[in-house]
Image (cartoon, rainbow, N blue to C red; front, side, top):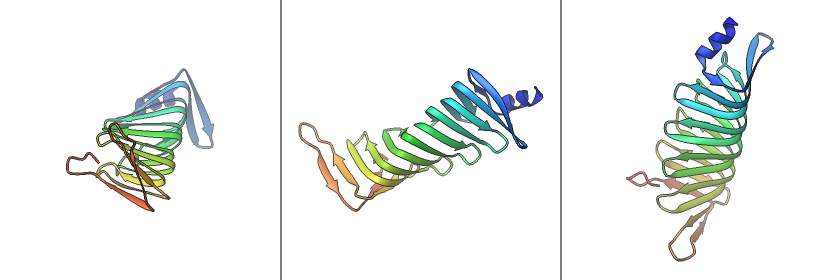
Length: 182
């Protein structure tokens, strides 16, 4: 019981069902249904999770939602490393920050250095300027608002009362203007 109380103090969490699993010298916490995990400035919600506080990671399954002060990431599944502030997410990943939305089939998220690498069916949407960029792979620096898309990217510029302008290229670089609006 002492271990369980210690774990609760280190990483606050809640779930409908909690199981402690021993694998060798490692103890894992299996959280089932309506899972909420809080660590520093991060809140994670999902339907199922396996938490390893010793190594500082959590595997998340079904309806994953990670909330930090500057944005929200949703996905089907993920693994997140608390100390490094990095995560690997897949299955319909959507990252929302300010007036930008980034979506992809899978994504590597680095919260410490504030960048993402996106893979397959990538879309970057700038809600301020009515722009959408599409590609198969991409990189985006969230801090500096600079990124690029590769593998036959295209850009759609939405206009009022007419069809959008569509631009294609081998590679797009995305750089925010002075106001940071993309």
